[in-house]
Image 1 (cartoon, rainbow, N blue to C red):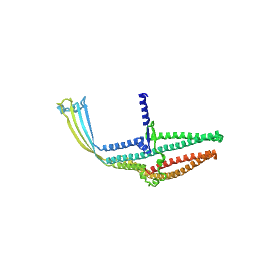
Image 2: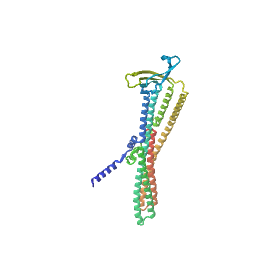
Image 3: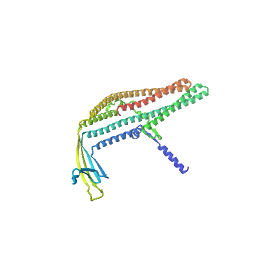
Image 4: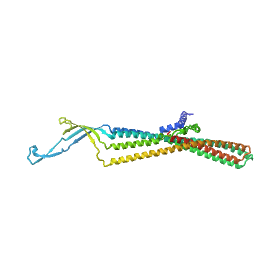
Length: 441
């Protein structure tokens, strides 16, 4: 092998190995929390809320600004005055120009908030807004975990279906081969062979459909995780491991429901706090506010600005305070407070409605979970029974004491029991996720 060919081969092997990643359910959730676009947007919202706090805080800090103003009079403005001021005859007037052609002024302006009742309330509102964003992010996190978990479970269920179908295909292919041999020896009908071929074809078609569904499930989960679409993603957990002792464990069912554990409830409560603080800000707008200011300037007035023999810089300093007293705002504040009070009442109604909805959600999720556990137990027994019946009918058929129709019926019952059992597993896992969500886990 040529050197560059070997290098290329090794590089391709490295890329092939590097372009796939394996994830347990916990690892998939953690990856999504770190990389999904939803979480990135949530992090930006938190950063924006922090910037809003700093912005509000900055409005109470003193401000310092500087200005430089230069004016050149091409024609100095004049003023008409009586001529007798300068020794002229009474009744006549003359024009006198005041000032010099060049005027240069540099000044520093300082402004400071001395008292404003809305400032600290506004700062508190900004902090509450950050808390609201953080609470909303907790809800985003919870929703994302549920999305990833259900997508992961859907892939596992698809894989379990594929395993069962492949097992059925291998078993049926073997039976078909044996039946064809029996047919050649004249101890079976062509109809028996045709039925088995049709069943095998249907199983293979169904298996291909399941494989495509699994591929779609991987694609959906990659999008949810913001995982590179061109890379291979492998799930490593098994359904049985995720179920664990769920069928016998009663811990989740006996856990006490508390609506305050739900992130949605905390979002509404944070919104209520924001409504209260907004109402407080509006009430304090009627109080006076006091601002202080100071200005220092240096002025230079010369006909020739670079002639140092002419007048030098003239300083000027002023300090003061401004008191703003609201008297009448056209009743704008009154109606703003009315609207804020209405928003607060709406939030309280929303909170009350959610408490009822969340309680029903928990009861419904708990009922679905208990029913799903019972269903899986029942369907597992049915599956075991269908497998025993199918095995016995196969033995009877091979020994020549059973009919092909009996085998066909046993096959149909087995495939149906398998499908129902797998669907029951998925329903149980999803019901568990939904119950945990309703408990605020």
